[in-house]
Length: 154
Image (cartoon, rainbow, N blue to C red; front, side):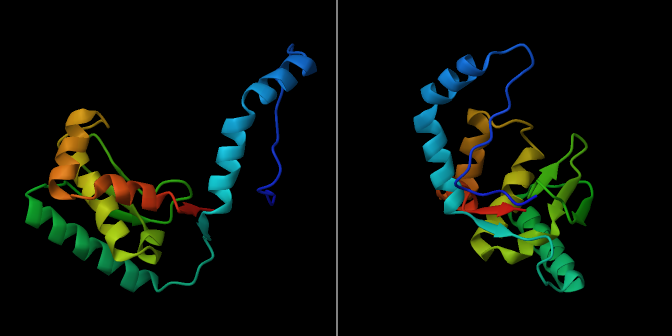
């Protein structure tokens, strides 16, 4: 299914009236327009993108090791996968999973995503402590976080 970034699809829950759903859409018109604009300016990284998987895995794991050592943020195990919706994740056991398509991003964003997950080895949420620690090791973390939003997985 191909999604048209100029089209909004509204699903009306069973038992809800169409007129009430239409009123809800009217109420959220500004938010919808903002989201559509944002989507028009994102670059989709297609899962079919051509990349040297062996080289990409090695580069991502080497960078993870380097940043882990540099900042003293240890992880348990690391995996590189072809994930559909996540750039990376950190489990409760400090296992880090990196998306192979990270290798298609600019280097600064790759480092940001890796550092984000390494901070999760210490702080398991996105609270104030998490952002303070991330900003301490990545001075432009908030800017990079916004930059990452210019890319999305298909």
